[in-house]
Amino acid sequence: MRIGITCYPTFGGSGVVATELGIALANRGDQVHFISYALPSRLNMMAGHERIRFHEVTVTNYPLFDPYPPYMLALATKMAEVADYEKLDILHVHYAIPHAVSAHIASEIVSSRKLKFITTLHGTDITLVGRDASYLPITRFSIDVSDGITAVSQWLKDETITHFGTKKNIEVIPNFVDPARFRRHESPYARLLGDTGDKLLCHVSNFRPVKRIMDVLAIFQRVARVVPSRLAMIGDGPDRSRAEAWCREHGLRDRVFFLGNVPNLEEILGGVNLFLLPSEAESFGMAALEAMASEVPVIGTAAGGMPEVVIDGETGYLLPVGDVASMAARAVEILSPSPTPAWSAAWAAPGGRWRRRSSTSIAWCRCIGNATSG
Ligand code: GMT
Image: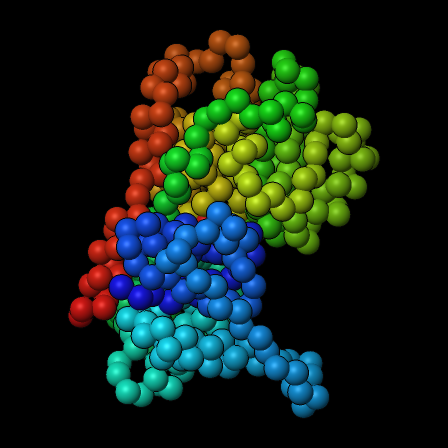
């Protein structure tokens, strides 16, 4: 098949999943065309694949467009153009706004045949942005006009039905990671961040309020009092400055490393000892899945879709949002030289349960096939 994929090219989970899916589809023999304003962060064209192409969307400048250049329209135009000359069978857009609306317009432009499109809902397009009164009607519209809708967790599907009242069939297809890429290994990079004896904790996100990165620091502060440890803070975003200032004020500058965005995340993740994701709510928690694939236990929250990803008591622990004391206690338990029997049992099955959840892209291939033929 010939598939057009649109996503945000930044470091967020939706772009990561879209990229991994494109690579998996190309590996099975499909022609994949990424259409976005920049090369997706995880797509390395140099390590390229002969069946993957990238098409950049450029928004032509015009004084009247200031200060709001119409990206959505430029994207729709590029989608229609690529669909025509590459004879695309289908478009697959990740994140509803504005990608699904652009895909709808593109399918109207390509009038010679029916160009179908699938929309994958990732989370904040439904729980934050889409629910905002100024975007709700167009988000509902974009769901209703899609030829196929998928959600990354059952929780997100339920949220979508509750808040948008849509009658569309929403298929739940959990995210996946490439298990050849995310795996346990001796990471020389991880060693750079601390003494060999130190435990290395890690958090990865876009540092937005929903991620509660001040909780990450509060947990680490408690852990570091008991266990010699360091913390790698990976990513960037609005709460970073506040978090860095807090570390300076609390004497944690030489224990907490703010690394910014890291494209080759697997190189460090495979060598860390514990992953912290104390979010307000994740529709899924892609970074937690990447950690688990790397056999790293996760401390997260019993909120949103995270319980569908992290198995409480087995691949980590899920605790109430904001309960940093309990999260720290569980972290110390996991990192201690003699963990509790329950934890050791889970730990003793290397690879097994941890990696099963990182699963596969097969469900996707079926979904795209169904939408094309349906
Ligand atoms: O975490 C974010 O805010 C970024 C956002 C995105 O669009 O990349 O992440 C969402 O999609 C990811 C991939 O499906 C999920 O793993 C994240 O849980 C979800 N974020 C939220 O629900 C807050």
